[in-house]
Length: 413
Image (cartoon, rainbow, N blue to C red; front, side, top):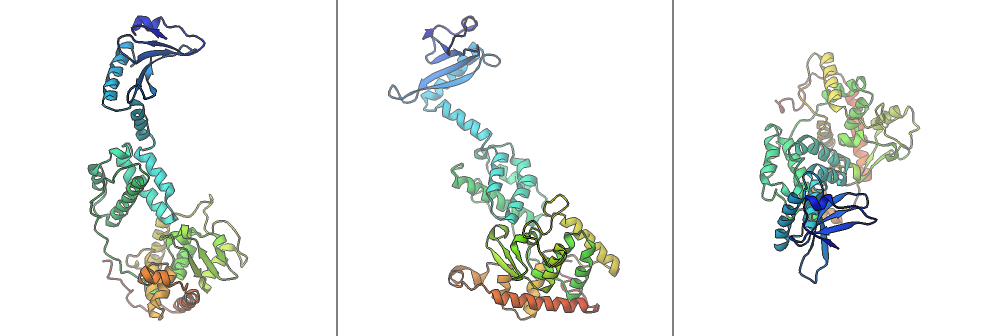
């Protein structure tokens, strides 16, 4: 084992051999230089953690050349020896720094969190929140370095009027930190003790019979995917993402049934939706006949991807109705169609438990002790309710405009 003072002269004098060669400094114990058979020179520090009984460890300071010269490498070795004296292992510390720079960098960690999320709707919400609001603020920070001030800055950068969006982003970030704690990547969440943003005032908007007729009739003039999606939202009362992501493998024309798997629902609970006459007619049109495909998306774009153009589709639908009627509909959203079905179920005398079962709500009738012992699936009751709803819609479509003021017209003003 060669020894000598590590200096510019001694480094320049090193010559490669058939194996790695070391020159150990005579002034600073453990400090050395290594030359490989290829002639590459680097500076190292050899040390023990815990006395003579501990095994020897070796830490690479860096390759010879800027910034590491014999002088700067010696200074770094002295700094590391001070840390070792305080019980800090530079090898472990370096691994942790690298892990924080790569694995625990927020942008990378958030991507892994998004991939772990179950349910298409929740995953899309998570991906959107990360892309638009979280990564622009936290993306370059290591997860353990994020503090309460950083979290607050996320919401300071969001428009104050986005009440619902702020709650969604808050929920995503809180879940991400909890996931990190459960995996041992964080000791505690920086959001502990933070108050959840105030809730959005519950919407009460639902569509009148005349409004439903206008929407139903105008829908086919929109995008070839958007029109049938809107009609199925009206006929089934299911969520937008559930309908637009519908696959032929989930459908049975023979049984007149749509089996929605739990990984495609908002609450993770599977649901079976009996298909009424109007729903089957829309699916027949999408299939080009009564022989439905066995696989693939029901509503695929020209690229084969799922449909996402809701905003453009909704704008065109509203313009078509305004052009035909001379006046626009009072403000409404696609989700209001779901509330409209629930409201009309009440008008048709449908039991509350059946309404919850159709909507796949885990409400009072399906939670707690009742949810454990009440295992009835309401399949036949759901079919009767949706058939009655289909009959009611057919009557609406045959009816002339009443001229009555739209239901809920004043509620969104």
